[in-house]
Length: 338
Ligand SMILES: *Cc1c(COP(=O)(O)O)cnc(C)c1O
Image (cartoon, rainbow, N blue to C red; front, side, top):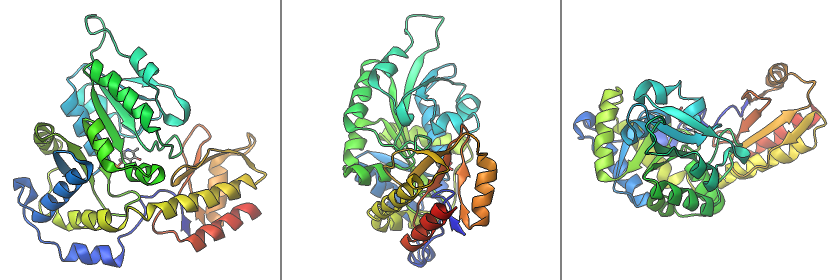
């Protein structure tokens, strides 16, 4: 099976497993796991941020950020495609009592003027207090789309002038950094908090990091405890993260190349209505109206290719470390014959 379901399906490489086996560990709930501490410091340094916190999932890092940046009854501005809104089980409402103001924008990307127009008047007691702008880069449901740097700066300016916290769901931020050839430190300077996933394109079995200022991470540590996310000898997992930051970032360019091969193949298929422009490791395409996405994905699985249907007619393929270029070429010819 050529598994293009998600970049989360990867298994640790032998080298990563070796790093995990030989990790030095301690009790991380007492902040005494040397490998977790090393990973947190390494990630914070990489982004030029003060501190970082290792968590079990990207949902948790996003939800902790929401909790620390807001008060119950507040409003969060985000894109209607955002993971925080669509795929976190209503967590912003459940965990933090917040409602969301969802905006439109091409391929999951927001613009500064629409963010500015969505901010409630803080002197109007009838309106919810807007307190957070939650961005996503790359945007998953937008087809792995990347923001232009200027847009991120403009929206950051709007947030700053209006006293709003500026959070980035960077589950696949490294894909954007590699695609745009941009240093991580730019992002560290711009955002109040950043969530990155180690378990996506970086190929770790588990783990995400939340980055921010020292006081923010201190508060985040308390919230992680409340959310039940404190782990003990988590250094075995953190060792995979250190290994991935050292060895699996630059190779993301290969995943992007593989995604472009799939894009080219789909463009040759008569049954494909359209393909979204590929920027990173995600390919989203649409079938002609008479084809049922459910039956299509099932038939494709029978031919040996696993993909996912995301609703609204969107079909998604994701390239990753565990699918070789040869397998992608095989998948491309299977698609063209399909
Ligand atoms: C995967 C993902 C997350 C976090 O998901 P977990 O499965 O909880 O790690 C957050 N945001 C985006 C955009 C994602 O793709």
